[in-house]
Image 1 (cartoon, one colour):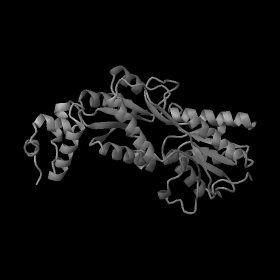
Image 2 (tube, helix red, strand yellow):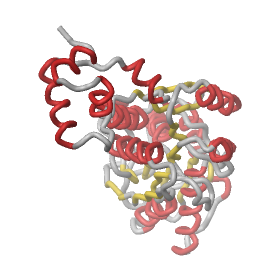
Image 3 (tube, helix red, strand yellow):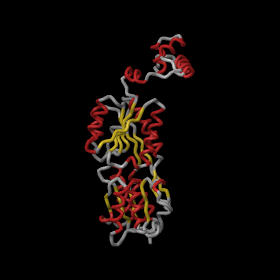
Image 4 (cartoon, one colour):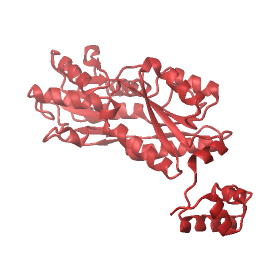
Length: 339
């Protein structure tokens, strides 16, 4: 049977205020007392009244993330792994992760409701854009946030990102050294910052390698398997047909691979394929090992995002944090010499 704060204080012979401040880690309570209180609380099974604690501290003990309802994230294992990493890190601090859904055109109103309602102590901004009104809104409001991705060249907020330009260039390098000169590019909408960066790296690497650019072989696709499938059909209809395809996101990549298989294309022999972030193993694309530009694990990215946001919440005067990770190439049976 659990005990309340009054009973715990009586057992310790301390005031309820001292015990409460010790449990919440306040520095005006000695380390020895904090340790003694924590040990007794654990032994007696004390569980704090979270609602009362939140009210007293004026905090929600929750972090929010808003994702576009039509983006297909719930079908993306990478996104779910990021959420798992964030949840585990926040859970260690007895904080919750709230996921709110909103259409892209209604996101700002969703952020406004979360902030004005006091439902979260901070937010993580996912899938940043080249010009992002969400970032402007959060900076103007002074609300704690971390962006999962950069916004142009801005450095006035905390962000965690991957070197997407280097990843786009790396894909071209790997295909070029295998003799491919006609490379199609299936890409996400260019208003998304990661798509702009990967496209920039792709084009730069083509120029540096002296490889031709076919405008008609650069196909935009929605962030979905269906979008990737339709884009691959457009690539297959080109004459001459490209010998390789680079896909800049994994949801589209699944659709591209499925379309090639349905068209009875020998992947890795007739057409080589590289997919950014790879194709998840649970997609049942039997016998396929898809070459990928990969980034540090999504789970660790989630933990890192949560850790960064905790610091922004707790140290509001600290300088913005910027963390950039580099991608690597992972070989697979989907890539081979140019036919």
